[in-house]
Length: 481
Ligand code: ADP
Ligand code: GLC
Image (cartoon, rainbow, N blue to C red; front, top):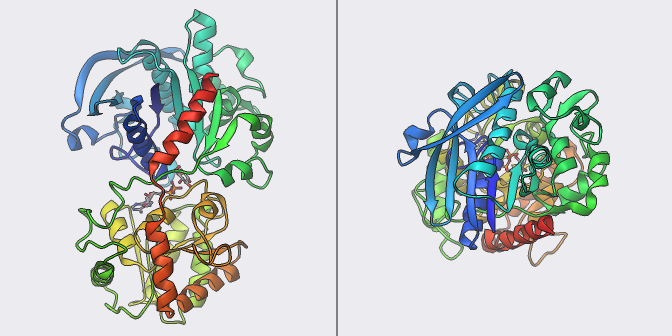
């Protein structure tokens, strides 16, 4: 099949979260499975400088946006025999310091930026010399209007448009903008209804995708069920229930070329489930790097995360207040909500030698933390998939997760299955429940035999993309049928 993927972020070019990892890895995996793949993404500031083999092309995008027209260049990078990345080069919109906003507030012209980008995707699908795709596979709200734009292009010009698939990585971000924004789309008014793009008088890009895509997926089976309920539906559960027969949950894979412990430029000491000595050395190095006492006997807890409400980091802050009376160490790498940033920084100041809060984004450090820590904490309120718990498993760090979404689908608790257990799960969204889970971890740390078994189970669990690719191929076939 010929598949055009579209995403506002793609690893290794741009990233704010797991969306980038997933799209980058999916593109690679689909191409490896024999499909012809192109990924469309914005050319943000700095990408060209870091990837000097990106080539300019003659191709130009020229699309109406409200009362004006917007032009853009297209740059190209061939990543493999069947894998091309097409970068939409629109300086005014994308040559900025960040992807979506700065200082914790969104860019005001995000509607213009991403409606333009969605139109550019349709333009490329129709006219780019790469050729007409069978499937346009879009990811999250920034490209949510693509399915309706494709349909409109077909109805208004007679063009046989490709089928569309939308993967929902996070229902909490919907791309909801004032109703007046609708004029930018150039769509006829009959799409601005509750059965289309409209949501309580506003434009809702994700809702549009739910209504118009030929098939919908989410990034784990449990999240696919959760979002059809009021508790997790973020106000779109009824819209999703109406399309439930065309909705599937597929757990993300892990790109083990990047996330492994035996051949990894970010790690000083290689290790594997057969030779674990390197893990202890990585732990000691990490403790030294962060200014913690380099002790093997103390359990090191860690987390690497966006500091957003979704991640339940307020809960962890409260649980740590209680647990820090015991002999543990804790490391946070993250950024986001200023109140949480401050909370963790103050915790670090009050517990020097026990708590380190690194505010910021640091890819290499995230690998060293996974390799150095004993337990990785993810107390999410909801988690569509979550990647760090799967990275942790491979890195021999025991994940402590809340029983929700992809966390529940990828981690096995002792009470679920003692033989295959590789993590610790808790259910209730309460400080007490998380503190109890941390307490269990401390006991586990003092039970070396069981700890070793659980680590072994985690390190040998397989979330490689090959399985996942097959599931997506089936979805594409259903979208075509
Ligand atoms: P989400 O996409 O909701 O943020 P995921 O678990 O799917 O959650 O993916 C998060 C990804 O972003 C992981 O690869 C994680 O390592 C990375 N990440 C998050 N915050 C940071 C940070 N401060 N520094 C480095 N990497 C980070
Ligand atoms: C989103 C979700 C996260 C998921 C990622 C990749 O950012 O919050 O749970 O792992 O997308 O699909």
